[in-house]
Image 1 (cartoon, rainbow, N blue to C red):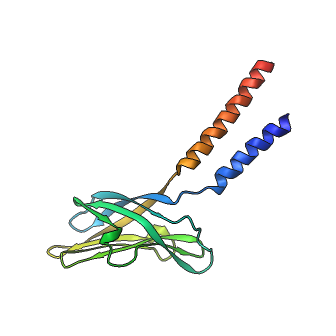
Image 2 (cartoon, rainbow, N blue to C red):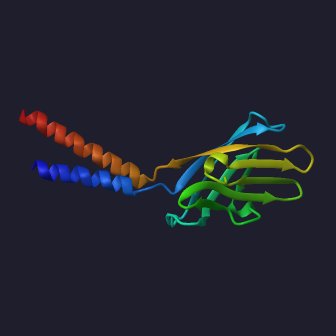
Image 3 (tube, one colour):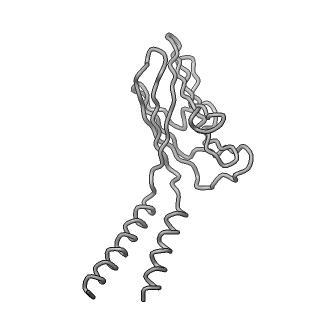
Length: 165
């Protein structure tokens, strides 16, 4: 009986490790230019195909949204195909470019990892602003469901042990 419970708990634990989020949030913090000190946020996702782990790889974004200075930038606004970039399996950051006569806005991947990725904005009439961006994963509903199922199993085991004692 104890073996079966341990097997179920182990299976749930391994399944939670195997699942990964393909949706992410990011926060831009401007540290130079006239917009110094301001921050903005957005979200993006890409197909769940994992990077190969060797060489440079760009995965096309399936969604992108950035609310910046009252304008919402999306996939359709990009002047080049937006991507999530990886080098030997290490996430470098996002590549997104919006380039019009009115303004230039880019998110650029880092060279070593996401820590040196940066954001750049330059209106046609004004000075440029730039800064860094941080990225965090958004758990998928299946990840939440799996976690809740694991908690239910652990709670059930604890309740049975109390009843037997």
